[in-house]
Image (cartoon, rainbow, N blue to C red; front, side, top):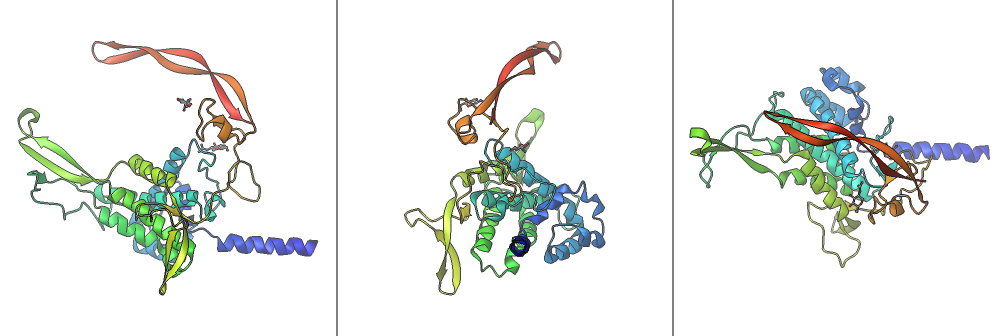
Length: 352
Ligand SMILES: *[C@@H]1O[C@H](CO)[C@@H](O)[C@H](O)[C@H]1NC(C)=O
Ligand SMILES: *[C@@H]1O[C@H](CO)[C@@H](O)[C@H](O)[C@H]1NC(C)=O
C-alpha cells in the first residue's frame, strides 16, 4: 500500500518533469515587470526558462520586457477568446500557468501555442517600432514609391524581426528535441500558424498631406493588425482545427490528417493530436481543470455558452441582480454628453 503510494508519487513527479511545459516561459507574465531584467544575471533567476532561453535572454536582455508583455498579451487574449467556453483559459499562480490542461496535445493546447508565438512576435515588433530597442527599429526595406503611386514613409512595423525572435525564443525547446516527437511537430506547426496570423493580415496605413486634408500627397506604411484581430483569426483556426497523426515519409516525419477524407491542413491552420476532455468537472489531479460549477451561462443560447452545454446537464441557478447602467444620455451644446444612472434587475444564471 505505502509502496504503491510512493511509486505513484515518483511516477507523478517524473510525469511532471517530463511534461514540463514548452510554454513555461509564459510564466514571465507573472513578473510585475521585467524592468528589473536589466542585466544578464537576472536571466539566470527567471523561472520558466530553459537553458537555451536563458542564453537568448542574456544575448538580448533589452528585448525581454517585450517578451514579458507578449506573455501577458497571450494570456489576456486567450481569456477573451475563451470567455464563453467551458475551459476559459484561467491561469494558476504556479507553473505551468495554465496548469496541466494544455500538456495534452489538444485543440486548446494548439490555440495556446499559436497565440503565444504570435504574441511574442507582436510585442517584440511593437517594441522595435516604438524605438525602445537598440537591436531593431522600423522596417527600412519598405521605401520608395508604390505601384499605386503613394510614397512609403513613416515607421513600417519590422515584423520580420519580431517573427525571427519568436522563432528562436519560443520554438527553441521543440527544436532542441530534434523535432522527432509528434507533439514537437504539433507545437512547431501551431507556433508557425500563430505567427502567420499576423503576417497574412499586415495592413497598409496611410496619411494624407495637402491643403485642408486633400490627398495630394499620400504617405503610407506597413502596420500589424490589432492583436484582437490576430486573436480572432487564431480562434477561427481553433474552431476548424484538424486532427492529425504522425506519418513517416522516407526519413522524415510529418503530420497528416487522421481522417484521409479531410483536405490537408495549410500552414495557417491549427492541428492537434488528441481529442479534448469535456472540461465539465473539477479535477484535483489536473491543476487548471476547474470544471464549470459556478460559471455564468446564457439560458437562451444553444451554443457552448448556453446553460445546457456549459453546465454539462447539471442544471443552473438563477439570481436577480441589480445592474447600474448609463441611460437617457443627452448631448449638451457644446460638447459633452450627460447621462443618468439607471438601475435595473437582470437575471444571472450560474451552473450548479
Ligand atoms: C474562469 O472560470 C472560473 C470558474 O470555473 C472562474 O473562477 C474564473 O474567474 C474564470 N476566469 C476567467 C478569466 O474568466
Ligand atoms: C444569449 O444568447 C442569445 C442567443 O444566442 C443572444 O442573442 C444573447 O445576446 C445572449 N445573451 C447574453 C447576455 O449574452
